[in-house]
Amino acid sequence: MSSQDIPEENLPAAQSAGHDEHGHGAVSPADDKHPFADPGLPPHEHRIQDIDERAAKRSERSVALMFTVSMLATVAFIASFVAIPVDKSVYIFPLGHISALNFALGMTLGIALFCIGAGAVHWARTLMSDVEIADERHPIEAEPEVREKVFADFKQGAKESALGRRKLIRNTMFGALTLVPLSGVVLLRDLGPLPGTKLRHTLWSKGKLLVNMNTNEPLRPSDVVVGSLTFAKPEGLEEHDHEFQNEIAKAALMIVRIQPDNIKDKRELEWSHEGIVAYSKICTHVGCPISLYEQQTHHVLCPCHQSTFDLSDGARVIFGPAGHALPQLRIGVNDEGYLEALGDFEEPVGPAFWERG
Image (cartoon, rainbow, N blue to C red; front, side, top):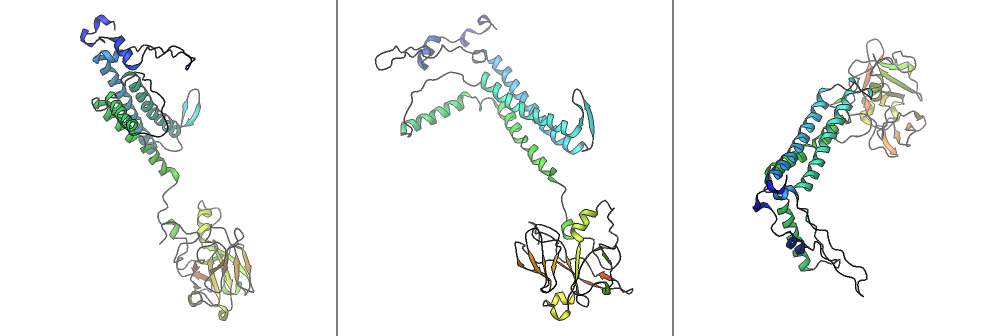
């Protein structure tokens, strides 16, 4: 656009006067105190947006468009996360076959962030004031006059940014900045499936037989002798099952036979059968499997961090970092003479978790 197309009242009346006001083009000659001459700032050249409101409106609409595209990309990011299956793949030249979900999330989040940045840069370069101001250096401590000047400059900058007058830019920018953090919030959902009540329950239930982990046969009381340590699993749980590792990590048992007179805890004695006690094999510190048993003291030791539990006294912690006793499984004998569970553990097995009651 030439100057002939711009109304005369919009043209800068005295450009040289404006230069002098802000120090543009001012020259400080060299002298004995300052051996280097100060060339001053170059003459300020007005942008087309400074003198033509129609051009300013076009720039405003361009910035608002970029902020709007950012909002749409954020919505597309969330929709992609919900709608695209994790195992779906697509062919993208020249990348080849890639995950459709990863590609969609990367593209939409990249566009959302890029449009916010590009919109902010375009806004600053075309609509905000670009007048260069020279300011003298001052001491580090802020004097009252300096504070007043800083606040005045801030108010002037806010006014020149036209944030209050350019409502379209302001509203779309706030919308883009409000929506884009939702991308990070949505990603938190991908940390893993919600556990629900899985941590509070195991496969043990009333009537389930105790099966020897080594022989895969149901246990009879005669199979457990005083001083021995036997590991057991619930009836029906097989190693080839898809969920075997997840289930055995909660349901693994260690079976120990103690002389009834040596059992100190009353409830432990009631939940046992002829001195046979069943405790969770999972350490309550970080979930390591307990496998070391000392028959003279009835202590079991976790090999990971040396947490020690007394199986003759409710499996309470007597040493180490574990926070609470091992859960006990109440057992009995069925009509066929096999050891069976009389229910599930009454408390979650393994380490404590934040919502544990």
